[in-house]
Every structure is written in C-alpha cells, then in structure tokens.
Amino acid sequence: MGKSRDLSEFQRGMIVGARNAGCSISQTANLLGCSRTAVSRVHREWCQKQKTSSDRGASGRKRLVDENGEKRLERIVEANNQATIEEIHALYNSSGVEKPISLRTAQRTLKRLGYSRKTGRENKSMDDDFI
Image 1: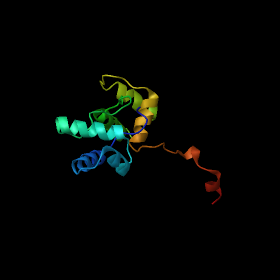
Image 2: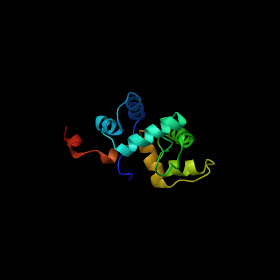
Image 3: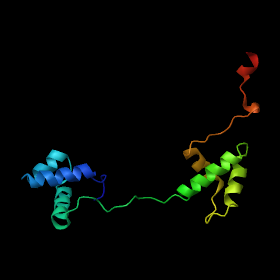
Image 4: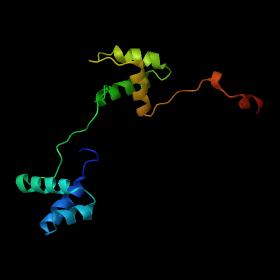
C-alpha cells in the first residue's frame, strides 16, 4: 500500500476511457501497467463524482522562504552585491520577516535562485601566476 507513485492525469483519463470502452478491470490494468485496485478506484470515483484528479497535495515540509521571501532576498543581494552571506542573512532577518531564517537556509535559498560563491583574488590558483 502506497509503494508506487500517483497516477498522472493522463493515466487516469486512459483508465476511464478504457473502462468506458468496455475493457475489463484486468485488461485495463495490464494495458496501462497499474494495479487492478488503482483501476477500480479511479473508475469508481469517475462514476460517482465525474472527476479524475487526485486530491493529494504536495508532500513534504513547506519551504520556510516562500516566493515573496525569495524576491526579498534577491533584492537584498542586488542592492548589496559585494555583501557576504552573513551580511545578507542579517539584512534579510532584520527586514521585518515573520520567521527569521538560519544562515544555512539563506545559503540554500540563494543557491536555488542561481547564486553561487564568489571567488576572490586570494583563491586564485597557482597556475595563473606562471602564465
């Protein structure tokens, strides 16, 4: 129970179409590569409620930094493009957000937004000195 992924909207529509076309539960399950139970449940839901969509929401923990928080973080980075992650983190938390975030969450969010570490002059490799 609960071992496989949810059926896509397309698969659910195919189940309803196959059952309405006269295929048996077993034929439909073999045709689409899903369980007989899934076929039965989807078809029963269609017959009773005329719907094929799943009400299951996204699983997992919700992100601490939502879309507005990401925009706020991007504005801070663009306004202070030379700032370190510690400074960006402090500016974000002092900007009046409901939930302050940790330094690691700020790093993770910036990475997801496409920002990466800057390499300063002191991180230059030895090969560059001999060219």
